[in-house]
Length: 304
Image (cartoon, rainbow, N blue to C red; front, side):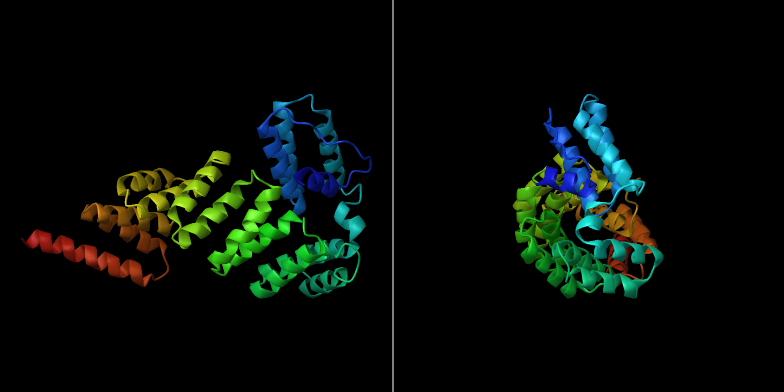
């Protein structure tokens, strides 16, 4: 499925057999490139095609795909989206110039044309961008009704369900997406986060481990630290949160650091970290209450 997506979205004029890969990392990079192509981020897709060629410079077929993608970026050729549903292409043009009304009208017209799954998918993205989550879900479901193997719509549905905190409903579409893209780190990360919210900590840890195995990025390490905090391994959690400060210097990072300190009864450090969290937050009542609680503890201990 991922090879089909990449070859189709690139819109190559000359059909060719897709490459046989010498390593799993090359397959992973192609998978990532395919996902970027599906959402129209061709520049990022090109980066991952280049990564494959760095590993295997003799991979002529990936070199051919890169040439085809270069044509798409340069607008020398019609993309797959243009050729199979020109209304979607029109919608992209209207979006580029900021004409929301005509963008929407073009997408609606696309749902009455051929290959309607693409129009419904982008209509779902349109609604999601406008915080119309139920309409977005309806559109993604329509895309999947028209094309049940359109993997990206499963991922989009899961992300939307996560946005509206329907965590129990996230798992099913993510699992379906993973049958098409078993090495997608984002899918495992989203699944782990939904499981975390549902209190499924063992499952959440397993999926977080898989996400980190595929892409050891700061965001997934932040998720790991949260899991450690929930498991009451405050020392290990604090170490990770501290290491992440150069990359994720947010109110939440300092909040968790302060909560780890509080649990380990290091009240002075807890007070300083909660204070930093308060500075970065927007009038957070919980943080203010926690700050006052810690301050009272310190004042009581000083009076003894």
